[in-house]
Image 1 (spheres, rainbow, N blue to C red):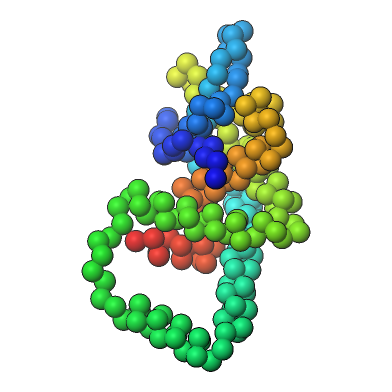
Image 2: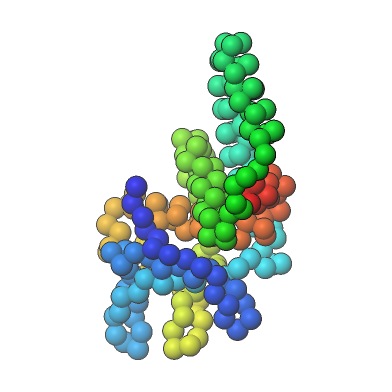
Length: 208
């Protein structure tokens, strides 16, 4: 699988948090600064705030539906099993529950990776849904308002037209969509606590 994102972390600028994302250099984008075209790999995505509540609710509803579809598929697979297979599965689950916890708690980096994998799973298991790309567009429309660049010690709002739409290093439509997905997964993973969803917050609890 292609990795579009090299690294990401939270960066505080002027008492405001941003998700600082570095793309892999082969997907760099060009921006005109002081009449000179330069290549960049860094973007900033602003942390959600109170004015985003309506959008966060909408996105949470989409992701909750994705989670429900995974649970329904798991139930269907369980019902297809014969009684012996079901009994063995339930026994394995009980053993896991009752097993003493000896493993060390995850560190911050491992915990974040666990959360990312859970969010990726929501998208990967649902990308055959007929409304998948409509939902993707809806989520990305929100992200478009949150994208910034740092230039000359200033944070300037920018456009995903630079980063994705008109990026010559993303030659195919598919590559543009895959980067959109990766940015959404990254954003939701880092700022999951802001999304008003009890089921999504269970992901935070399990990543310990």
